[in-house]
Length: 286
Image 1 (cartoon, rainbow, N blue to C red):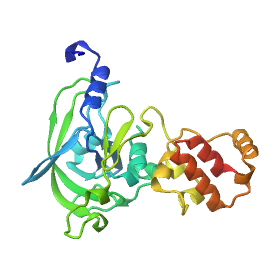
Image 2 (cartoon, rainbow, N blue to C red):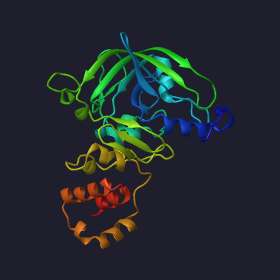
Image 3 (cartoon, rainbow, N blue to C red):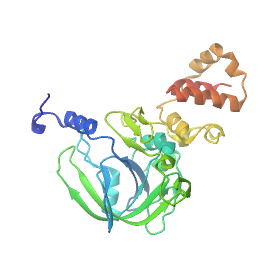
Image 4 (tube, helix red, strand yellow):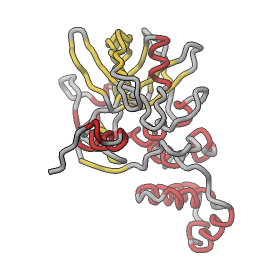
């Protein structure tokens, strides 16, 4: 058995062991605003619920391991003392992943991820309209566990209002675990779909995806492509070149001749096989 003293290995390696072993973890899809009212949206898997009376949730936007900087969510929570914790289900997992990209402070992750800002009732940060359960919270406390890279910052939140989609309720008015279709975070690039088990999403942290807002209007408003499909398309750094698209068309003349709906169906099939590049080539064919 491998035995490790945490003080004797690099923080990045320790971080990997912790995340790989303590899994799956629920995801706090946290919506905040800064002191000037600019929205921010980011997911965190250091998260759970810790009481019902009062209803308390705690999540931790930890200090970045690579450069010991803090995240916008922490800075906003300290400044405004408010946050919405949105539940992540399978329908929005790709868009959630895209939002974790480290965009600059003035970039709206709602727009980048193609998610809808929904006004809250008791606090200022926006809710994610597509999330099946949304918790409006006041920040009661922030507990700093250290000042080095990888240290946690425990944001202690009290739930002041809950919004639940009726579509996930059973005949008794309680949440149906199959209908809510929750996902959780594991180690590396792995996630777990509560009702089905593990699946994988490439991590977007190291690159800057173009975002759903940069996808052409006719693709964003497709009647075929889902929010998850758009999240995958928005997580590319750049589009295929015209030359590669043209070559793809020569290899697949039946796709070139297809109508828009059929092309979107072909693109979706490539996305279902995690081939985002080919999906984009299909969508860019003229």
